[in-house]
Amino acid sequence: FDITDALRLDGGTQSIVVRVEDQPDDATQPRGKQDWREEPHDIWYHRTTGIWQPVWAEVVPDLHLREVQWIADVPGASVVCEGELSCHPENPVTVRVLLRLDGETLAEQSVRVDHRRFRFPVAVPALRHGQDRHRLLWAPEHPVLVDAGVRVGPADGPEDVVASYLGIREVGVADGRFLLNQVPYFPRMVLEQGYWPQSHLAAPDAGALRREVELIKELGFNGVRVHQKVEDPRFLYWCDRLGLLVWGEAANAYEFGPTAIERLTRDWLEILRRDRSHPSIVTWVPLNESWGVPDIAAVPAQAHFASSLYHLTKAVDPTRPVISNDGWEITEADIYGVHDYAPLGASLSRRYGDPDAARKTLAEGRPGGRRLVLGEITAGRPVMLTEFGGLSYAPQAGDKWFGYSTVADATGLVHKLDELVSAVLDSPALAGFCYTQLTDTEQETNGLLTAERVPKADPAKIRAILTRPARALPGEEIGAHREEITPRSDAE
Image 1: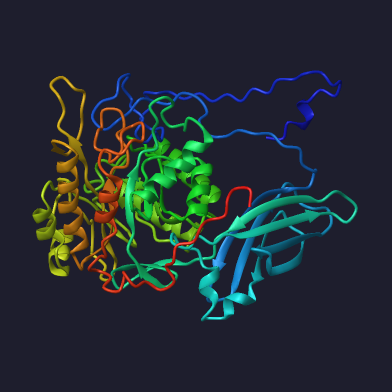
Image 2: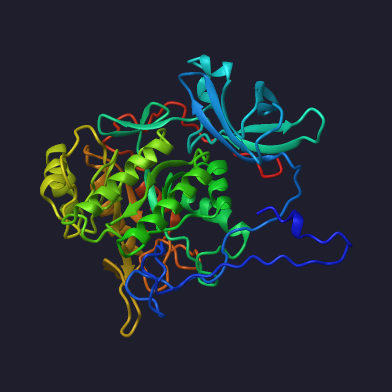
């Protein structure tokens, strides 16, 4: 909002009020895990009231940058810069881009722009060196970020100067594997609800968001599935900076119809536009477990909506894999994300222990009570367990509790975690996993950490279980250019 005309010029104090309202019982409103009841039940949590992500004001010239996006093109040895100006320029203006890495100038380019939106490639010659380009490529073990400066302004007016950054990397799928920078990579993710005891969807402070990323990495995960929540950009910043894969997901509605379709589609387009420059985000998930499309297997309109979200996402961002409906009843997908809370490792091995078993499970299995794939199964698409585990300590009598499997103590937690994760890592058919979940969240007490972020078992033992090489990637323990580096501090 441009509030210039609403400001007084007499120098007096003025208040700016930003207000948001919603209706807690409106099932067509995308809401994620926020309960429609007054008290949390099953897997739904207390609602968050108010604005829970940053709001700020800044002074800018009349002609300024509204948006800057970055798209890496590694084979093309370039980075595409996309952006939007605040208004259509009366005369052509110059957009200047400077890309630097640790004092090295990678690119410097100026382009004349005569429209409000612009898009142009920025050549990065250092990417042409095939034996040396790895030093420029972003990965969880090597989270290289390139500093980007963008300037724009008319010849006779003030410039607008924006400081940005980007990560140069490619993601994709092929031959049943997830690819990072054209090399098979095994995502070891954890389900992140992103709730906090004192503030629900909002982090208690900015430092908590950085610490959350650090905790995930310390436990041995290389990725996070942010579940039914569009996470704070500051969390995504730390995923970029410290090196953590992210599956970007929408908060879903619970009812199907024209209003729900319009709301989720509008929200999803805004999510894609805001977050698509984050190198950490490697997969998009618009729907989860048929939430908002409860009759997708029987009602063609609901299946069409799920498929349309897949194709809409690919149209807006063709650089990332997309899953139309993660968990089951998948219509279109680049990755088959399956949710299976089998309590025994032997059960997981029977269902996914080899390629034939995995194909049969996709075609015939119903681990969540519903068909996994609607329509034909496409060969070569990776299969991942994107929810499994869910281990809780056995509740005491009268405890408000929800979980999938229980253990008695820390020793039992480590033993059962090893059993389940080993079944996944020992399968040549599974291309990655997402364990449920990082933290206890209200009555859903199946976290590896308590709601206060205290580990329930020795983190070193958990890390040893999670980081054992996967059979699906026989050379993973070698891994090209996977050295750990110390990320730059915020000040640097």
